[in-house]
Length: 200
Image (cartoon, rainbow, N blue to C red; front, side):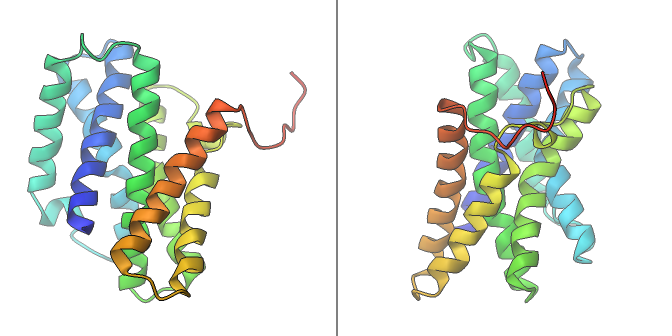
């Protein structure tokens, strides 16, 4: 279950990165690099924080192949990925839901405190996008008013609340990921955001 989620998350975030790079009119090398950084950036930071080295993508070359194949796929069908903003939002949202679950699982495997596990889930989900946005000269979404990291935190909390009910672990991860995706989708649809600190 976790391996499937990891593959789906990698694909979703790679497409997200490729769409941003295309929007910025980067060359082929730039597009692949942005796709790669978006897909593995958060997981790399997570692995370094918990002392898991070499980091996951270095131990599992299939991740590199998945990123390359997904990047090529996205490039070939880029004309069919209409409405780049909508496509980017969708794949980015799916990515954070899936990667939050992966980060949670890594923290649990390392026998860390639930709060730290939730933090690792949030880092895994968000920091690939942060690196993507910085490299593309954008203010990262996580630092703006949109509900982004908050959705990951709520997904992590859902996992540990439901854990008390002794549910199947695969079901726990599935529900937690869905919570992240739904919170993000609903927040954008109904324009729910964190309190504003500055006058517009």
